[in-house]
Image (cartoon, rainbow, N blue to C red; front, side):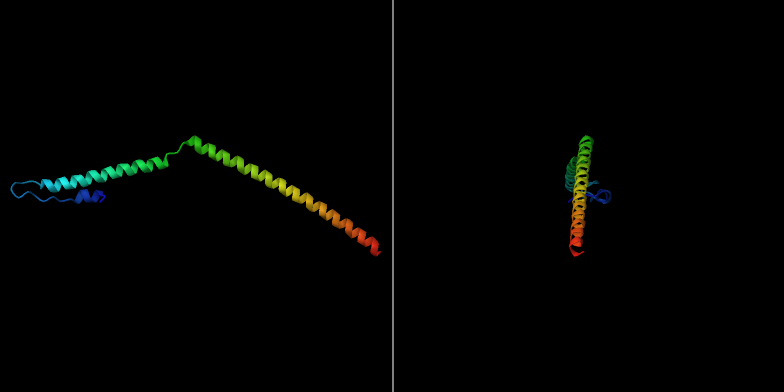
Length: 107
């Protein structure tokens, strides 16, 4: 059981039967719960802290690497588009030549 701040604030101990005060066994059990909850919270905090620890130089290096890769891909895409465009121009030119040849036969 993980204790909440409300559990601690609202905890009521019964008083002893023979003398004024709290039942020591009940206080000991509650303190054990508090100790276990705090231990778990500290461990969880350490675990989560380790997950979010970030080295800014590694983040920057990764971002720069991604940026370089994006630039390479854009250059390759532009090159390919240029090749496709050249190929289309060549094909269009060849079609026009064929049309002219056909026109000379039909004339």
